[in-house]
Length: 233
Image (cartoon, rainbow, N blue to C red; front, top):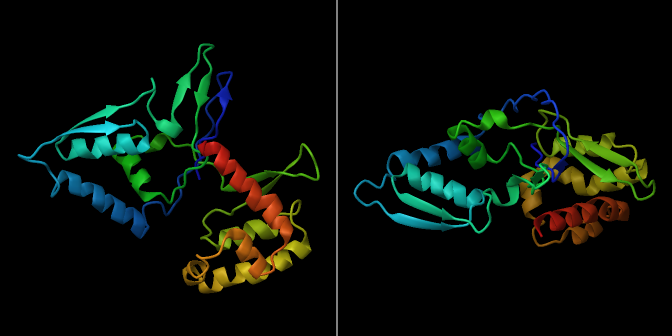
């Protein structure tokens, strides 16, 4: 997982050692499909004698990606952006004091095949700084202290989530973990079919249906929801 955390850099830091790229990054069908889709812009989707001039409103990831692939196909895109910087929610700029400010998408997953393929085509994928798959929470009962849910590397979902829950000792008690089994075990056994069958339920309704503890909703899911809302406002 790559974190684009919102931050202010107040001093030059020595570059951290780069973590290795996920081993199976290009071995998934999703990635192969993404690669095949983008290749079409250089072949069957070529503009040839039907080149168009295209206006793209917004210089975020979507707008810049659109311009890149339209250009690959032989069209003439122009990106219009109201701000002085490109990148949208992943933009970064230097303020008047010389500090670097990152707007920051909170997380960026290696499982996003189109983005990973785009970065490879632009020859900038080596700039990604991979971070451990980890969720950190402030503990309400112990102000100023944090706890982590560590997702083990090279363990597929949802088994990595189960491992992260079982190994956390600060936020979830043994009783909490036992109460989570009726809701989580079918995910491990039935997989996507079970998950799809829960689509009509809210998170709270799902938890109540399977008797999961209120602690999980109050300390984990509500905290995550609030964090996501604030990031995108």
